[in-house]
Image (cartoon, rainbow, N blue to C red; front, side, top):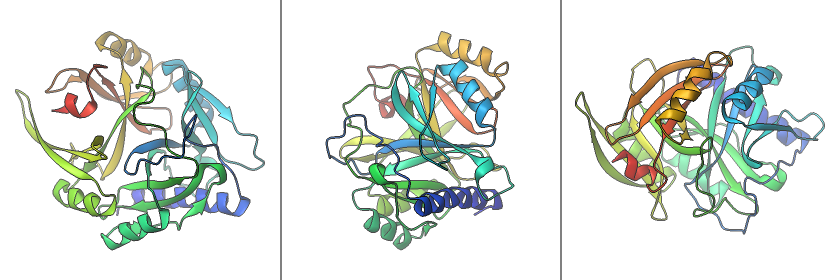
Length: 304
């Protein structure tokens, strides 16, 4: 694990330790939970940022997101809503026990039994950074890293996960997540054992290159993708994608990124299967992808 990855993990672990000490109760990740859990599904996204005010202005101006400070004494957590629906959370890095820049999006993966889940991670060669911690109404959470150092959180929800059929991802919603790995085959084997994913191999091809792509699924549904990291200087990490309606909307969003305080890390490019994708960073430097997507397809179909 690189020093930067370790600092990020320690920052999230420090946040959870604080939650445990203060006995916070965070709201459920589902609007109308029905008690059902969907192990392996990425059900939440948290953003650690060292520029919370600028970050709020950035995403509000770019995507219309709303930010709600929770009425919890001493809580370092802001709820992110899109069109009134909760879609993620934001943590002020400046209030964490680190002086390093650890701004990053963190994926939260559903598990049916948090104790068994962390044991499975450890047994498969990963590392458990925080023991299961209660977040009250939200459930029990733990921070872990895979053998290559990619950090994630595992959550056993108390009242259930957001349903699969549910609300189709609209423009500005989270659409897909990918693990960018230094060794995709080793990562594939780890996540099969640790999370219980089944894996379907795909071959992506364009006029310029070919690449292997792995679709991670549970319950017969695609949950995430796995690919080789595009550059060696990028540490193994989870990357989240936001849905963009079409190429025109993508161009409009990208035209406003810099004036709102962000950066375009990778300009819009065509995908082998059609559509366009770009990678941007908010004011804190935390990267996130923008993806055009046909609402009649699943992301796994779009990536094939």
